[in-house]
Amino acid sequence: MSKRTLREVARLIHKRKYYAGETIFFQGQAGTGVYLIYSGKVEISAAREGIALKLATLEKGAFFGELALFQDEPRSATAIAVEDCVLLGFFQPELKNLVETKPKIGNEIVMNFSKILAERLRNTNDTLELAYFRSTLAKKKKVHA
Image (cartoon, rainbow, N blue to C red; front, side, top):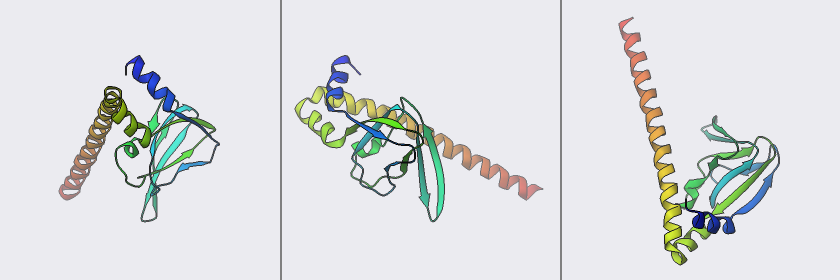
């Protein structure tokens, strides 16, 4: 992002501290924005039908919760501080306000997040494709054994 955009975003960021073991947000909770890890570690997990799955452990510089900037859907995962954390939050109302009042800056932010979301979607597709092919190959080996 341009320096101008970064300065504008910096004005709108909320700094929050979470302690080790503290829940940042729960799966199913209303989402409001994205968090950037300034310090510490955060674990992202999801649960379905009584089965919990650890999705990622994120460290300084990583961000999470970005889907909440673009849709009013419940959180798809739970985020918990693994160790004491300082997080920088950027929330949907601020993004909407930027898009309306400073469209050039707002659009630059939206485009940057869109690129990152597209990359994450591509990685997820690659992972699913690989899992499917491995599963299919394993089934074929069982049939021929």
